[in-house]
Length: 302
Image (cartoon, rainbow, N blue to C red; front, side, top):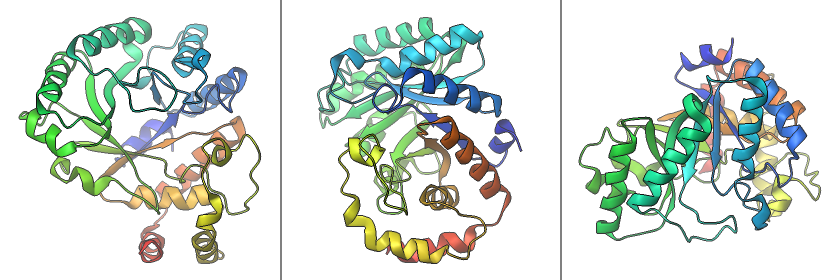
């Protein structure tokens, strides 16, 4: 089953780029893009501040690599999501979500990615000021005339819902969603109105084998893997006889695929081998019935 056929099942696999330039060098990014595209998938997720490695020379690195690959291959049918707001890549909450900046940023990405731009998202909004959020929404209403718009990392989604008035302005929302943590309920008013895309499905790069190195996602993100070991042991025991799941990433996909309201998964593979394994697992999990395993995962999550 190819990438576009997967969309018929209301579930898409989207390529994440948060670690590009941080733990993933440019030549590997090209290999990942080649494999992903040749497998029939088109969705790519990026952000102005990727990678968030605190090194200013890598600000906008991920989007730059995507553009190089597009130009090198003459591609015009991607579905790129760009998240905008952060003013640098230090991982701090400072952002610029003013009307003029968002309008300008959208024009910048329309020129950069042309027909490959699919969705423009507000990113990392910690504001609780209704007046300033209204101005942001005014810009989104203009932008949505040329591409889809969405939200990601919103501290006060209730204010957004109140200010939107026209609920069809936003077409999608990205949320952290995994076995250990989910922000889906925080966006309750948007349920059934927009599509939800899950990121962070493997909790920062957790593995069953506990073999992490200096450039592992867990290491660079400073995630305390030891705090998850007991639950990981339970999960590994759960799938010990499973012919479907081979890794924690597989288990994570089972959880996301079966979660109500989730229509897409962002996968941040760091090698050609990883993206091939992820694509194979995605196809297999969509074709099989994993609902029983999902409900057992829910019990562990409690």
